[in-house]
Length: 324
Image (cartoon, one colour):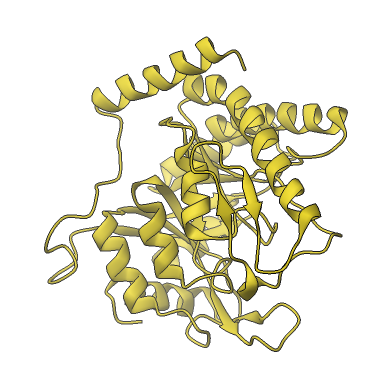
């Protein structure tokens, strides 16, 4: 993107924030003790919104839903929005999913950007305030195990010089390419996101990129833009660093949350596995207090299995109260 245009978008986002665009509060003295002031809202993840899904949501105490089906038309999305509104529910997010922003093939990168624009319009038709975007992935090359990552990078350019104590040059190059390509792609999406009023929520989903809290936070903050934030999944990152460290590092950049659990086992292939919420290694009480400290009030979508929808709802109530 032309630098002057990018500077304009940054200054425009700053002006919007000053005019009252919601932003997450920063950690304040004393916020880590006493009753919670932040308010969390429960959501399920479903492909489409149907009357049956509405019944499940209402019967089990969920306030809204995050939808996944990217094959819907904008007309169908608007109909789903009306259904939700008629029932007092909210389609709070649309799961755009994986995007090959860092593909080595320019045609695939272009296709990913155009798909991103299409999905932004679907999110808008749904009335969703955020679209989830996984901005790239790498694989099939030598890279450190999750616990072995020790990133060294330039805080200004975000270019990686080292990934671990051992040498992983292919991974370092792949990460640097991904950062540059993802930045370019997201910047191309920002004008449409601003026009539609839909925030781009960047998420990591075992894509082997931006694997440490400080580096991921630096990447998100590099945009300096109100329409680019972090969609944080509390389970996806536990094998790299405790979930509460991700919350603290990302802070006011967190726009939405996914909740699931992960059981660490450093001897296993992936150094652990996803398990039922409550059976894993995540310290949910500490995570809840960290969310209070960074001032996160907003939606939490359950992305887990092993419990019924009613049981998940009760589990989320305990998490919200700091008792999980």
